[in-house]
Image (cartoon, rainbow, N blue to C red; front, side):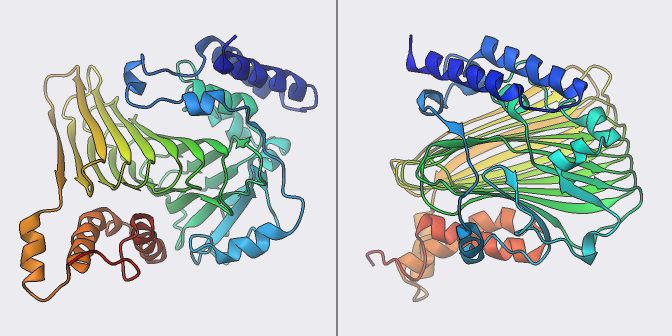
Length: 445
């Protein structure tokens, strides 16, 4: 029996042992069991599958991860204060090792009128909208990691914004991992429902309190009602020894508008998926992505824009910065369903390689089943222009500073789109820290 098969069986045994102690409503219990059975059938994906051709998840599949335990002391509070991404000046829900932390959570006046709490609390209260939407949009039929998350779903954030409400500040869903020296796994599940004609910004963040090997397997479902406007920022800044899978599934109603930001900086191996279904006529969506990796990090971005109704529009802009021996993948898929006439979709992926050893595999993809559409896609891969560096050096700017300025200008095309300034500012600092470019690093002149 292989190590991978043994680990899959271990997940199944853990599920059976844990299921006896759960007090789920019947509908959720049925979904859990169906998801676990589907995971057992699918197994972990392999590089023989086209969607995973450039990402080998064997390092995840072979490790005997156990469900992460809550920290035994008050260390998270002190350490969290030291993290630059911990406090963004807005209301926040905090989860530590997959469990809600009321001590670290801060909800003030800015979120009044919004139902915002941890998912387990909302389930216990029998909130009707949870049964209507949970596990209805992030489908686990053909996806092992989503199936595993659905089987083990325990806690995460639940946010419901009522009709017509305009939030002045974002709500921050912060997921923190304290490795504790053990290979633990968490399965955060977030459900966000934006009512018709509402306007809101949601930030979903994943950070580490310390270095260590662990696995975050996160799934978020976002429902944007008719005429609603939603900005959703997803930040992954895990430990460089960690593994991360994150799926963001968004469904748009009629004339709804959603803008997403997928920001990947951390983890040894990360896969970030964004799937948007434009399910209402006249809906619009913009996907923005930035991934910055170095060392031997590997990051995979897989996006799907599903135009299911006519007169819908989408724009997708993803950029990658790769240094040293890092590697990346971008697979952007645009689907235009039969009858989705007048679809207008554009996709762009640009990559900057800072090292001869860095690699990127990019695959923009169009699947069009309608005949009256406008769809374009493109991808570029390149290095810093030596002529641009020479130009800046001729203006008395050192080589290190010139490269820093050009790299920042490239990444800032995405960072500058973020409307919430505290997040944009902290993200800019994190990009420089990740690359090791800045005042503290000197390059030969």
